[in-house]
Image 1 (cartoon, one colour):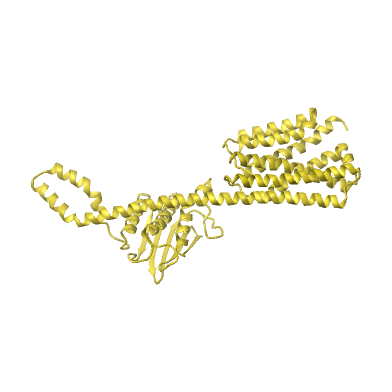
Image 2 (cartoon, helix red, strand yellow):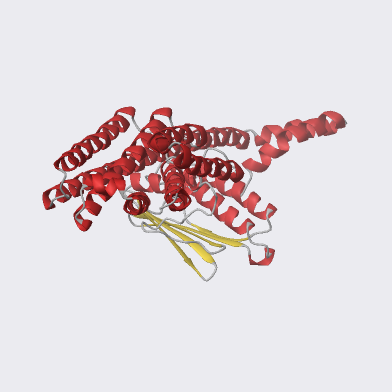
Length: 441
C-alpha cells in the first residue's frame, strides 16, 4: 500500500480524535470564551497537525494526543487547574485503553497476533478508527446530554479518579504486552480481562460525573442561600420602615398642627419644604391595609406600584394575616420573589392588554394558601414542579422560585407550578401551626 493511501486512511482517525476531544472538554469543563472562531481555529490546527505528524513523524502521534489534550484543556476551557489537568489526563488515558482494547479485539476476531495486527496497515488503521469511534461513543454515554458549565470539585476527588483511570491504563498495558509476547492471537481470557478494564474506566467517568453534579448542586445551594440572606436583610429593612410608619401615624396630628401654624403665619416656603419631606412618608402611613400585617401590606403596595408602571391588570384577594404563625420576613420573601417572577413574565408579552396577575392569599384552618396566577409565554415544568428557566445561564437564574421553595419547605409546606393556555400558576400551602419547622423571627 502506497504512502498516499496510508495518509488518507489517517484522515478519519484524526477527525474522530479531534471531535472527541472537543466534545469531551465542552461537556465536562465548559467553554471559557464566547468566540466560536477561536475553538474552530484551535481544533482545525490540531487536526492538520495530526495529519502532518502522521506523514513525517508517525511515532510522535501518541505524544501529540497527550500534549494536545493538556494544552487545549488549559488554554480553552474553564474550571480549576486541577480539574482541567484531571480531565486531560483521563481523556488521554481512555484513548490508550480504547486503542488497546480495539487491538485486542481485532487480534481475537481475525486470529492474528498483536504484532501482525500492528504491521498490517489496513488492520492497524481500521482498529485505530474504531478506537476513536468507541471513545467518542463512550464519552457521549457517560456525559449524558447536559451542557451546563461545571464547578470546581475537591482536588482529592479529581486525583482519586485520575488514579483509577491510570490504573486501568497500567492493567491494559500489562494485558497487551502479555498477549504480544506470546506471539499468539488474543485468547478469550485476554478479551474478558480487557473488557473488564474498559468497564472500570467507564465507571471512572461515571464517578467523575457524579462528583461534578454534586459540586454543581452544592454551588447552586450556596447561591440560593446567599440570595435568601439578602432577601431576609431587605425585608427586615421593610419591617424597620414599618415601625417608622407607625410612628408617623401616631404623630400625624402633630404634623397637622405644625402645618396649620406655618400656613397661619404665611410661612409658605417652609410649608412647601415640610410637605415635600413628609408627604411620601405620610402616604405610606395612610396606605390602605390589605392583610393586617404591616410588612406584608407594605410589600404588596410596592409590588402593585410596579405592576401599574408596567400596565399589568391585577386582581387581589387577601384575608387577615396578622395572627398567623409565620415569620413576616419569610412571608415577604415568598410573595416578593413570586410576584417578581410574575411581573417579569408579564413584561415579556408584547400584547399589553393580555398582561394580568391574580393574587389570592387565604388563611384557613391550619394552612395558609397562596395562589398567584399570571399571563405568560409557554413554560416547561420539570419533575418536582419547578419551571425551566428560559435564560441562557440557567444555573444563576430561576433562583426566585428556588428560594420560595426553600422557605416553604421550612414550614413543611408544598409548592406546585402549572402552565396551561397562556397562564402560569403558582400554588403554595404552608402549615401555620408547625412547631418543628421554622419559627417566626
